[in-house]
Image (cartoon, rainbow, N blue to C red; front, side):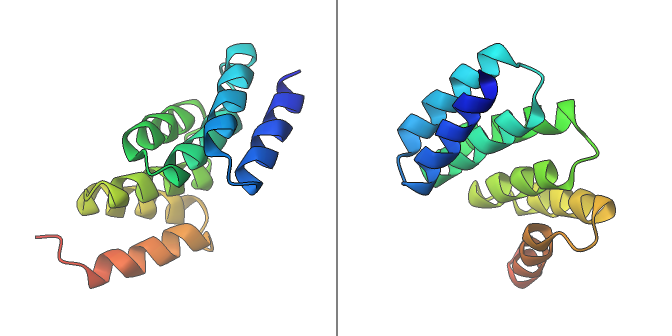
Length: 119
């Protein structure tokens, strides 16, 4: 059941129906509350809606469940960067890169962060 809801959420994201995606991932999380991928996907849906506060909450939940998954830290970095917390984003991207040196989101975020004023 949760897999079908996850697939429906992913389809909704692809169709740019972000409210539906959030709803589907929320239903899936109710069934599998410790599934880090569901929180990551809902974080992405929130970010697509430019709701970075909720995106960050889900990204942080994702990393609390699966702290050794680079993509979760990349989501934290993206949300923090979008909220203007460049130091926090830097730390999250660094954590992602420790886990996976080739993780593209973290690499791009780090490059962006280095070009921005964080003082």
